[in-house]
Length: 244
Image (cartoon, rainbow, N blue to C red; front, side, top):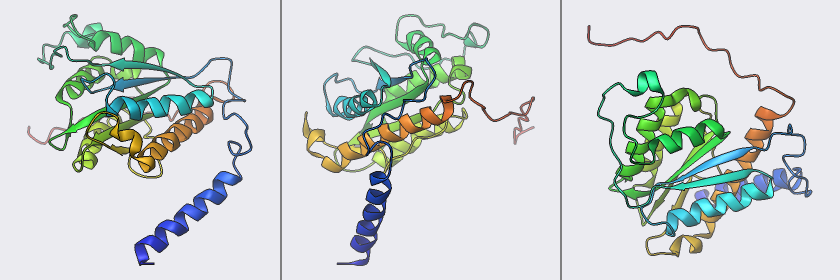
């Protein structure tokens, strides 16, 4: 057994000990002590394929969230064109995008009503799908206030490589909006090329379930006991441009 295998097996054994002592292992529902409001996670499928590998990854998350009593809603970007931001400034006063013929304004409203967000994407040239990037950039720029403090996670699906870069691109948007990042036992990555291959990635599917467990835990921590005690923000943004 080499050093890497030893460290991995040691970490897995430690994790198993923690899980065995957890409420989930005892069959208790993580959401038992929540307020009457049922939690909802908005899932964005950034693949043009409705039933591809990205769908499988998000579906595994949705099934696990359902076990915790957390609702999910899936928005699939499909194969219709999505506008990119044209910097018109319309959204600054309207909180919605000037373009009304794609998914952007619908997603803005759904995100405002949700408690958390998970965005899944296939990996194209080491990056997220351009469509989902355009969509989320417009959603966040038009009404970033609707995303503040809501837990978020990115999920990247790839054939072989580039997924970590794609995942980092998604996470950078969340980090800019004070959205707590939900992690897992590994980076939030699933492998597969042809339709259905993601289901064969047993570690990837377990990573998705663990991500869902962690999302449920975070929502419970935030919403148990009444109004969440969010961090106090400074009253004024101290913006600094490096070019004067």
